Image (cartoon, rainbow, N blue to C red; front, side, top):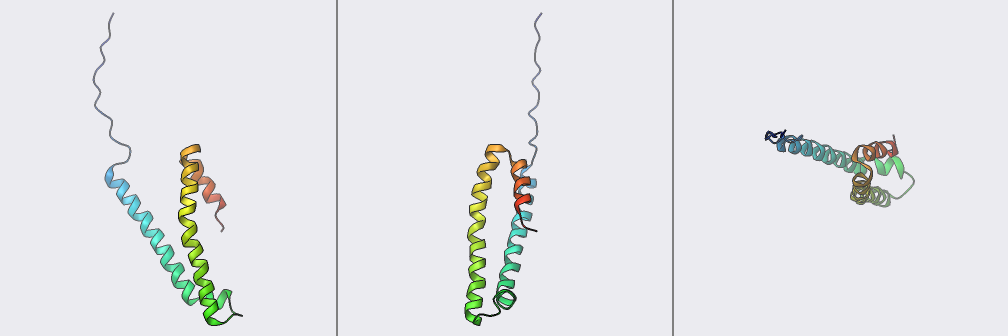
Length: 103
């Protein structure tokens, strides 16, 4: 007895293009807002809060140095966690990155 297979229609992608674009837009907007708020605080608040005993110019430069380290560390972290996401799974890597984040 022979069986014939019916041509099944191709399955729709799990994530449509519009959904991916919307998620990317939201993620980028949150990241931009995070850096904007941090940069504003680095100018207005951090020099007097964290470097109160320093010269005002040195305090401001130190505050910007911390901001610069955060700006450089972000892509390094994405490369590192992207590697592990491809190796052990994105969900497990996301959970691990959220658990390592300071409160």
